[in-house]
Image (cartoon, rainbow, N blue to C red; front, side, top):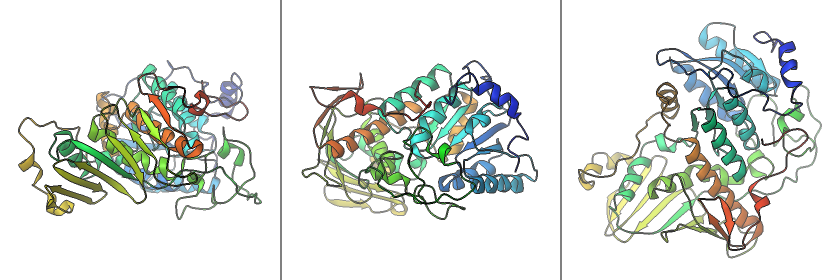
Length: 434
């Protein structure tokens, strides 16, 4: 399908001629008009892999949104997404682009959904913010600590809305668990277990012969050049999640993948959304995939364990929370063991003046509401940055097998630990964080 049907290639070439391959070519004052409360929001999608399938269905079902363009370096995924949008809308006007910068250059696009591999998130989102687009960015928000802070700065400077896809904040049970913890119902927290899976490893895949229809250079983008491998970017329509998350160059293993969910819930429950831990301790043995710990300035320690979910331990009770599961004990008595038995119990334990947390039942719907109101969404860019910072620092303890002392205010290593270079990464060719 012709990707230039809604945008002149000649105009795009004029834009990029000023900046080579760098993605930040669009001044922040261009196309930054606010979305009127009653107008329909035109949305573009960047990244049309497995994760985008559900996001696209949700966006197509919302009457406030109109998907007008998609971008992906894989021709098959891109054209399939265009066809799905056109079928749902009854039209033939969804444009497709191999290069996301062409999509961002369109004046009629108000907002973008970013579901690219992690190593692309920062460059995609910063360019989008500077182009005046509001943003839904998949989790983990950033691939490095420096990228996360740069994303926060770009969003704030350009007065954009960014919702991070840590959607457990909008799922049943998690807010309830956090409110129980926040209000001291299980007493003083004595420890937390975070079960999120293991860290990433350097990519060691052999090269394979690439198939036509994929712009492999664009898929890699700022990541190091290496031969194509189907585990990183399987061809055809996605049947399962690809394996790029396993590798340092593109993701952060399960520590980043599920940590962006469960570390996020711990931050929410403990009231550290705009801060974070101060000490990170390595696993007892080199090469371990669990056992790392981190500690907050109030002494609460979180232990990284195998499995999935979060355990909060208090001196009066215990809470376990996961998707579809909320178990709650007081004085060793089981109060509720699943979401069904939990219904109606919360108000019995929370006082009238209890701390109540932001309520959302639809993560993308909450993003749309924020676009209209211009108020921060439930998982704002700063929140996403703080969570992805924890993911990064936990991974660093595994990679370097050493204790890290961290100042969440200055976002610097302290006490002679760590290396400032670990907060960022090198970028290939003309791609850069600026």
